[in-house]
Amino acid sequence: MHKTLLLTLLLVACGKSTSEDKKQPAADKSGGPERISNHALATTPLQNVAGTAGDIAFTIDLPMAELKAPEVKGVYSNWEPKKAWFDTPSFTVQYNELGYSADYTGDTEPIGDDAKDRKIVRAEKLPDGGFINLDQRNDEMFFKLEICRPLAKGALCCSVIQRNDKPLEAFGEIVGLAEKVCRSMKPT
Picture 1 (cartoon, rainbow, N blue to C red):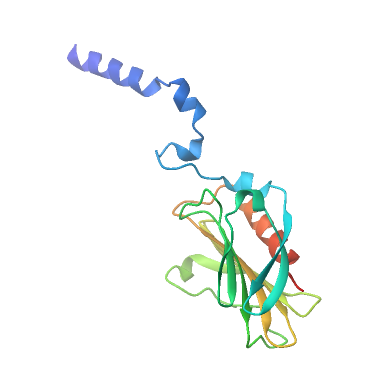
Picture 2: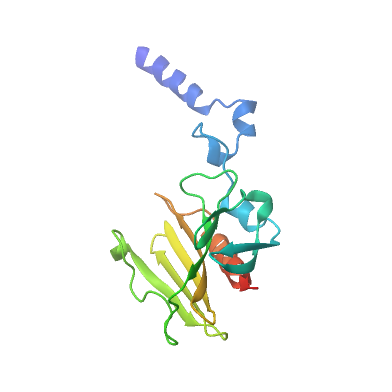
C-alpha cells in the first residue's frame, strides 16, 4: 500500500506543471539567467557596423540588437550576446600584422585537447586571396569558423567560436550566421 501511494504521488509530482513553467523558455529551466538561443541569434537582422582592430578600420554585419557593445583591445574587437553564457558564440575581428602565405587556408589539422574529436571541414581560398576555415567537433559540440582577408601589410581575420558540453542547438543555422557575418567583414 505504501509503495503504491508513494508511486502515485511521484507520478503526480512529475506530471505537474504550472503556468510559470510554461512561460520560461526551455533553455532557461536550469534556473540561471535568460539566454539567447542559436535560432534567435541566427534570425536576428544584421546591421552594418564600423570597428577597429589595431589601426585597421573595418565594417562588418552583426546581429547588433542581440549583442553587447564590443570589447576593443589592441589588435582585436570582440562581440558577445547580451544574454551570454559560457556556451554562446563570440564574434571577433583581429588584425594579424604578419599575414599569411598566398596558399594558406588556415589550420589543416585541429589542435588542442579535443583535437581527436574534431575535423577541418572547410579550408578554401577566397577570390580576394583570403581564406575560409571551419573546424568543428564531430558531435557538433564546438565550431570555429575563420575568414581572413589579405591587406597591403598583414591580414584582417574574423572568427566565430562556440563550444558546449552537448551538441549545439541549431548547429547549421549558427554556422551559417558565422559565415555570413565573417564574409561581410571588409577593411575600410
